[in-house]
Amino acid sequence: MSGVTLRQATGPAHSRILAIGGVRGENVVTNDDIAGPIDSSDEWIRQRTGIVTRRRAGADVDVLDLSEAAARDALARAGLQGADVDAVIVSTVTYFHQTPAAAAVLAERLGATPAAAFDVSAACAGYAYAIAQADALVRAGIATHVLVVGAEKMSDFIDPTDRSISFLLGDGAGAAIVGPSDTPGIGPTVWGSDGGKAQAIRQTHAWSDLREDPSLGWPTLRQDGQSVFKWAAFQMAPVAAKAMAEAGVAPGDIGAFVPHQANMRIIDQMIKQLQLPDTVAVARDIAETGNTSAASIPLATRRLLDEGQVRSGDLALQIGFGAGLVYAAQVVVLP
Image (cartoon, rainbow, N blue to C red; front, side):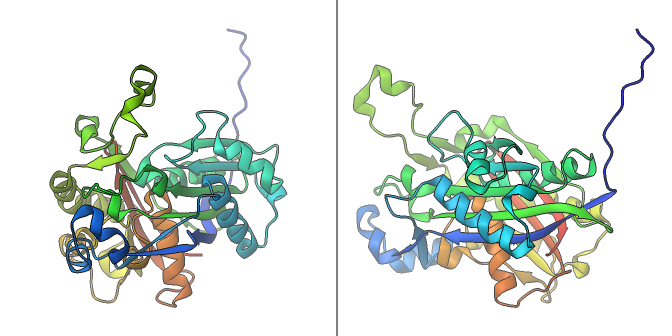
């Protein structure tokens, strides 16, 4: 050993979300539009999921386009330019390029180069995963402003005849700017995974399988609805409760509950499990937007703010959960 002590970066004691932006697919798709191929009805879909419409993007729009629109919205709300961003994290499972990362291309589009840039693949928990990383980067002194984007074009992986998950899915992107704060703005993250249940939400086959058998066609998504429902509705509530406990807050302190927008029945069951008071604003963006995976939490949060159901400074309990199976929750101060 040389006896030299390495320097270590240090940053502010706290971070917070400075702004949230978002964009949804431009096309409104009703239950009647998709009920025929799955032999269903508007009534059945509403009762089982709470979805009335979902938003889907056009064929000429991709994940990067959605990401850029959401990012520009968040930057404008924060009063920042792309050049002010030190790191870009994009959470997505629907970007078609294995490499380069969507985040690197997005950083260039925004004028954020040479910001650090990388993608996160954590499905519906991806936004909460990325917020945890952004919080750590800021407090470690590695970045001052981190752009977090959850973006999905789920319609690219839909089988119109599948009634396990495809009829739930929508397209969109949500973005947050995380920066330094004088007071705590992002509570401890409670996260984890259970790969033993990996097949509960899955792709029909691997891309590599197409090389051996092109007749397999384009991979689409499937889920085991009952097992996923039970896991999310009953096992995720304790995770959310632990996030509140780790943050040192009680249910009565929470201004908003923003779960991943997977199913309205899951949301209702989690509220009961958590014993949240009626004063808590509950995100129900799924009714009009559908399940947008990594985009769902920031989009739902943006809606609550826009509709005046919550105010800047309120505490929001957010939790993402999905394919993997993976999950993450934290309490955040709203921008």
